[in-house]
Amino acid sequence: MKWNKALSIEEIALIATGLESYKNMETVKDFATVQFPPCSLEDVERGIPQQREAEQNKLYERYQEALEIKDALEREVYIVDPYNTDVEHEALKNTHLVISIRAQTEEGWIVADRCLITRESAALWFYDLDLDKAKRLLPKVEDLYKQNEDLTQLLATPQQAPQHSSQKPEKPESAIRTSEELLLKSVGILSLIISNEKNSLKNGNNPNASAIAETIKRKAAELGLEFEKASNLNRDITNGLSAIKNELS
Image (cartoon, rainbow, N blue to C red; front, side, top):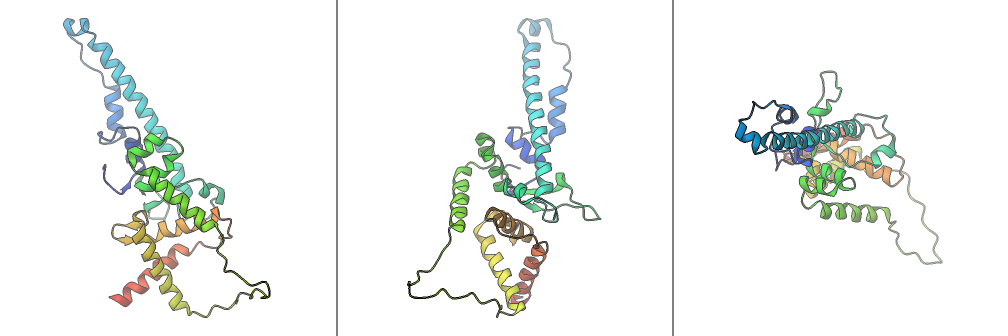
């Protein structure tokens, strides 16, 4: 579990609280509430029962903290679900979570506790809340955070070509001259490029269309760009990747 690039919300909560040696949350609870058999008189004199009780109390406190983290992560998963078109842009702006693998019911409803979250995005989610927990998930989280900040600053800075004062700025052309087929392939190629640059945008060895689409939407929200009609972006990215894959095969 420690080196997986994608984790369940339960695994994230266990790692963040230092409980990753336990199989699951239920196991932690069992150890924290188990009734020990009576101690011998010698052990009582040595204070063993008190030590056990103190250790159990500490374990139960960490279990409760892990439970709270798991609940908070579950709420965030519903927010970053790419199929959730009703989410507020401000909510997306304030979370870093990226779903690597989306689990769902037969009807298509997301199952949060079975989804897998990228380790990098989980570490970034903890960054401003608790740096120690963030580092448990990703020791180099500070470097990753700075890279994200630098990228945000770069994208937010308008890049303008110099113009002579005597020249009038040219009006942008409104017509798109590239064919729809070529645009779709371009989307696929760009998605392939950025997924190779960032492992959190991959699902195994393949680009993760859902994570890429969600990253684009989140960045658009941060920049204040109108992006409300992008509900099919995930599908377009998938189709673009399929287009180049079919041509290469």
